[in-house]
Image (cartoon, rainbow, N blue to C red; front, side, top):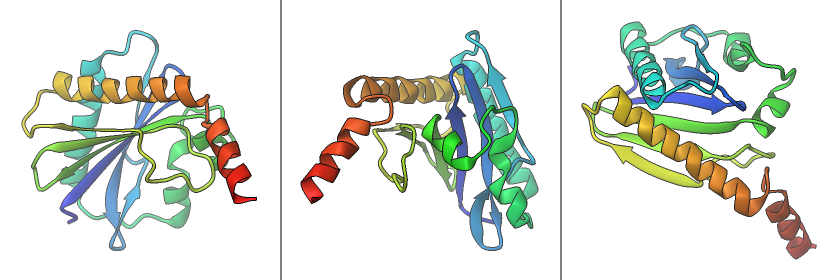
Length: 170
């Protein structure tokens, strides 16, 4: 089993779909075999932390899975209004929580993705191993606050930043 465990938490307005990455065919892939959707303004940091820890427990319990290509590509389709992956990632914030060999949790925040914007995190944080669900959830919520701040300064999708890059390259 992979020693790196990852949980993906997207944010679509007041909805937080939580999906784990599992080892499949030698690669960490997202699955919807475990799916938790937290919804509404009443979602607390503890709710988010419990969902993340439950996703990590799912990864531990299941071990490697044989996911079909379709299953791997369609994990995000649960309970969303978007019809395509491109629309989904352009309109959702992403926080990933990574755990390596039961050491601390690393939390990365990404604004809505445009094109191949991966690895452009706007915030990183760590949470010690053994932290409570509430502590882990608080850091996830801090990551979303950092995304909100980034959006205030760069525009909703960082469009201004992309236009500047295009002008420089011409």
